[in-house]
Image (cartoon, rainbow over all chains, first blue to last red; front, top):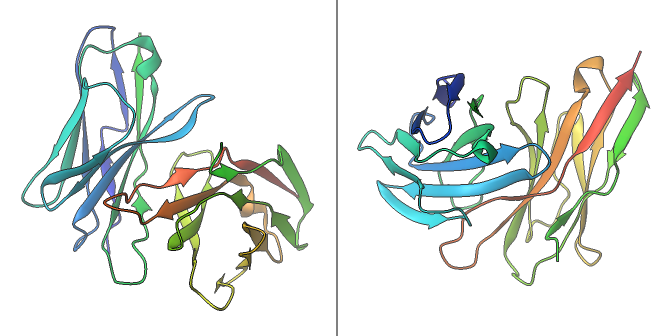
Length: 114
Length: 116
């Protein structure tokens, strides 16, 4: 069974541009999560989508946004890029089984803002 | 206050020996889940083991076991028979179930190096 996939693997942008990151969850998973792992800041929760709706968002400015499509894949958009947005962006998916909703992660997209 | 605390800056273990990675947590939610993930240098987060707050027994998954001490709010990961491929960053994470919150809160991680 295929795991979570993310594209692109690497993305290089300049300050002020927009970045779009994509994630495909494990087949059958309805929830998608986005996390940012910036150097020195650890893993920070960004967004949670379930059944096409945004369910929760972390402490990030509105220029971080996203959506979930009917096939449960998801897109993260970062507008007006700033240097400190450079980070590894990890997507995870899960399906609530009643006991646990373990999140399984993709390989990440490494965003570099110049 | 930090919700997940991992204070060991770096750990070294000899191949084939066991190692314990510490994790303490803080929550007032009676229902929560604790997770351990491994992150090799490639960056992908690999799920290792899960412990629910109401689980009576400590979780085990192959060479991984979780030493869950609820009263002390600790959830230490034990890796038995270490292998060179175990060298990586290890993260402890918690999921609280209050309301619509399904996010994971991560600790800062521990670097494990396995020596041949």
